[in-house]
Image 1 (cartoon, rainbow, N blue to C red):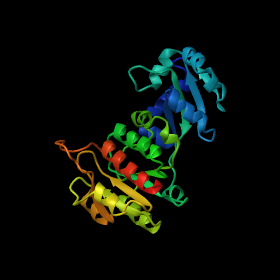
Image 2: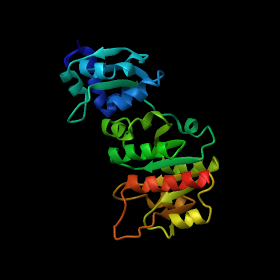
Image 3: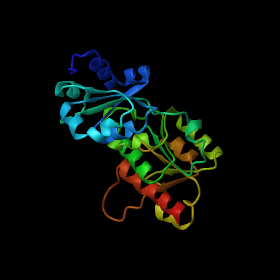
Image 4: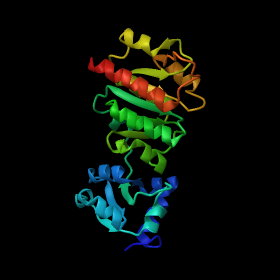
Length: 262
């Protein structure tokens, strides 16, 4: 049985660092749900580490693995985990990111773009919401967080494996390419004159749409807002000062999803 000192475990543990993930083209997916989605992607899965208890509990799932399942003790799994209570399952996978042209190659109707998003939990939740709303791709532009980091992967609840993810692109370039692909580019901006209700009522959301969402503290840069076709705010009817990034993104993406399906 492998331990925290075993070579394969030590090699996998280096993937907790972003620089190593990018160098080796691999990342860790932790927990039963993430591992289940990884097993469904044999093109991505390299290997799975499991404690004997987790292997027994999830035997049916692990029996379907196209890659080796390696038994390891609890200390080994804890060394691969970034959570307080490890769940005993970790998969090593190829990075999921694709190029911008690949992500937009299938005539997308709904795209979420994060610009300078820094909180991995928020970014992962936006990816999960985009997946649930039927989006075709998620783009993390400029200095956004790494979607393959442990906290972000967990926040996606498996959705990271479901739709194309693009990273390392310039927001201005992305806006131009989205327009060329025929999408209306909307900037989610709390200070915008137009609100989401107006956008829905006037039919603005019925066509292919890309939503831009900004940094948790600063919002979108002014030049990115100006480059968009229109800035739109989520109306706040109560006394809350604002909505956080993931909540606002979910509302906007579902408004577009509803308009597309009416």
